[in-house]
Image 1 (cartoon, rainbow, N blue to C red):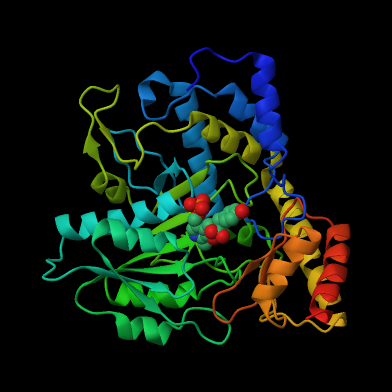
Image 2 (cartoon, rainbow, N blue to C red):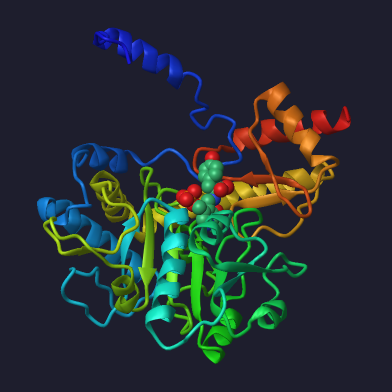
Length: 395
Ligand code: 0PR
């Protein structure tokens, strides 16, 4: 650190130079995040100092968190929703705002493990969970941190998890299953109803990772079943900082039963509350305010419009790509496209180097992965496809 502070002018010129190195989402077709809505930004600013790690000091920000959880529960077909006060546990769906899908997935599995250990089952060996091969890499962190075996079930020809394989991986140490509603690479939705049947038959927990799809599926013309309406679903991750248009860091984790949050509690003797079930201590009240505000401002109608826009861009991309001879690996389920091209890794590299396009790659099979977000435009797509054509014809 420098001895003497810099002037405001120096600091801002320093910041602006760093900012100019950011993409600002221009020519970004690889991200599941986007510009936050202006209402979210304003709400974030207003609550910039609020710390949800010490709820008693920030009752107002906490009220906004509870309201956001109530709205999310309603969206996810919970019959009744409550964010818990530390003392009273009601008989309803509950949850809290996390930093994103990673924290939500970690906490969901931590809840499974704690409930099993304190509850019915005695585990002789290492507990395991079964996840789809398409699961986000946050589950690698789960495996690493929690001493849990993570078993991966292969996908079927439509890139959904193969439920027969899931079934065959279940053994006496299995504590839970994971299904994905909007997987990172393909945007596909796993057969959550079938996973629910397996979970109920085998007395297992079922976590649904809807970090991306949670703010997409409910607003599609024909939504897929994936939420608490399905009886075996015990927890859901849904991220307002992706298609929810909130500020970073905004995730959410909802549980069907308050016993999950109870199982996550540690004592916090010197705080304004007696215990804490969150993973992080200090938590952003600003992000909670942003999430609550943008959800109230947009309402269902606003999100339907947002999703419709992204789905139209997706349809346009696929239709025009086909005219140029590029086929998608699967008919897009949401605003994620996996496009077959020759040598996708080289195409990706060339698209960035020559034209400044940020695209990503699916792992198996390798293809171009494109996410159509609110920051993309119809013109972007036309320009992108011309550039893609140029790059592939030069291969
Ligand atoms: N679950 C799913 C299904 C996800 O797609 C993601 C992230 C997560 C969990 C983890 O969420 P957090 O990153 O909020 O903890 N999916 C994107 C990905 O890894 C995240 C992302 C967003 C990556 C923007 C790049 C980017 O520019 O691809």
